[in-house]
Image 1 (cartoon, one colour):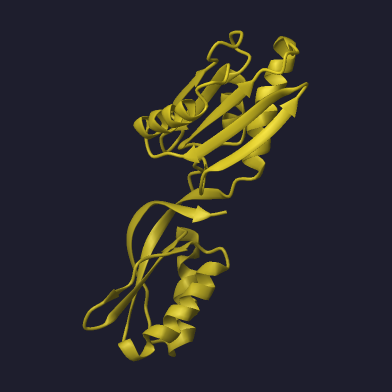
Image 2 (image 1 turned 90 degrees about the horizontal axis):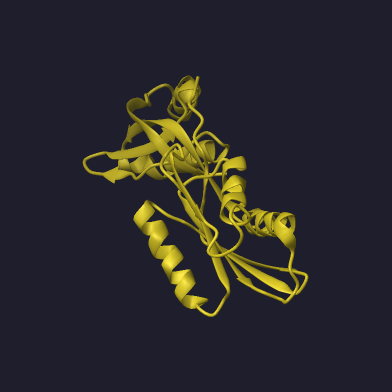
Length: 215
């Protein structure tokens, strides 16, 4: 059975939510480490230095094993933890999120704050492009340069049907085309390659690793 890994997001996203005159500005971004997350958070806090609160949450690691949150002056448990819970519920990792609150003069109460910060993160993530992490096998196809363009297009179409991701080709004495494919679909790719070449093209399986695949 293929291991299921948390997803991440493809690029930074911003979102604004207004609740009872308070503005909640949400910024989220993909990060590669805790240090990257800290740098992103510091940048948002510097940009919105005049806000009453810059609450944060982050999850990092291939399996989301590292997590942090901060209420930044809001009542304990009403901001950072609800934000983090949204990331956990959506099974996301390697991202950081900051919700900046400009107080509108009307208190929301503990329950209202929990709902507000949760909604701010949820609505922001609704606009995000997801990237799935899959455990895939590298497959190499060695072809003559004269056939490389045609086979590359066929391989690209096959992978585009949801069968993995393209790798970087090499062009030496022969062209080596690469793809990252779920182990269960290796026989299917072998059959496809045979049909492209009258049986002459045989894929060679290589390393197995976790690969980012656009959702």
